[in-house]
Image (cartoon, rainbow, N blue to C red):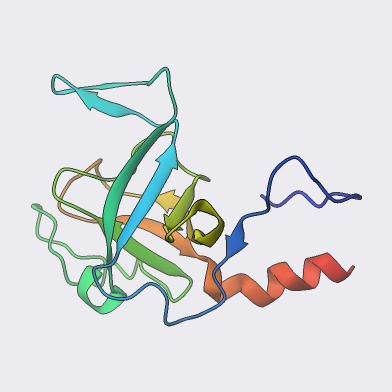
Length: 149
């Protein structure tokens, strides 16, 4: 969801949105932020504080071929489209309840951070298949056009 404000906000700096299809690069570190479930003692639990975890960008051509333990892939199910991107690391991922949260490429300072994605969906939390995110560079011009109207 995008909320369009009538006036500018001066309390916080706006998030920079990625406009380049070349960002991120293969296996670059990204940060997922959200209130979704965490795994504690083998069980899913909802956190009391905002969570963040570092994951790695997995290019679509690699992501779509990663095999689920049941033998299928995102390619075989035709689940991955150009406006999506994948990210995960061993035992790290977005989880249930994180949808809509940011996927961020951290810069050298918070002012250099760039939001590259929005948490969309996944198969299992930190399972074999990486988490899937909406790719903001794909819809960047649409977002910019909203500012004009």
